[in-house]
Image 1 (spheres, rainbow, N blue to C red):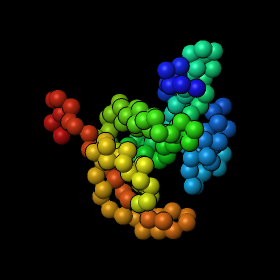
Image 2: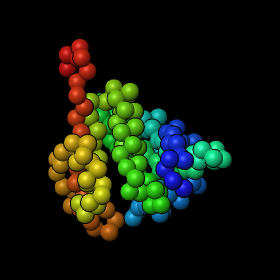
Image 3: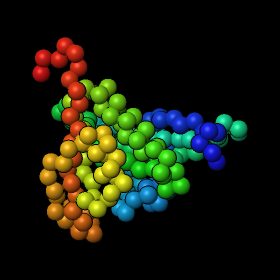
Image 4: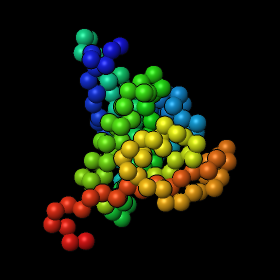
Length: 164
């Protein structure tokens, strides 16, 4: 399917999306979450989870191609999970999805976004660096397989009129 035939949309994730999201998570990540983890996150009052779809303009079929979720805590967005289906990677869709999550964080009056990312995940690191995330520290043996993670942060520009 050519990109010219597709439109991309972001909407809030719902319980009916969990099967599709789990399939993307299994295909795209090394540490997929369980159904109960997604169910808990969808009922978490401080969380926002979104599904990213591609719609074929010829037949109007919408297909889930990615998802992301974050917590909004004390003026900070904590990016918990972000993934694009491997069949759709390499088209700058991760950029679109991360940009949408940053905008959601700003809607929730967050001043920054923080995340953890494997130190060897070059595609993700390049994405975050393109958005000017800074590396704050390393969490040693953070992942179940013992891999280290960078803690990265993006501080949002202050809004005009902000006194803080």
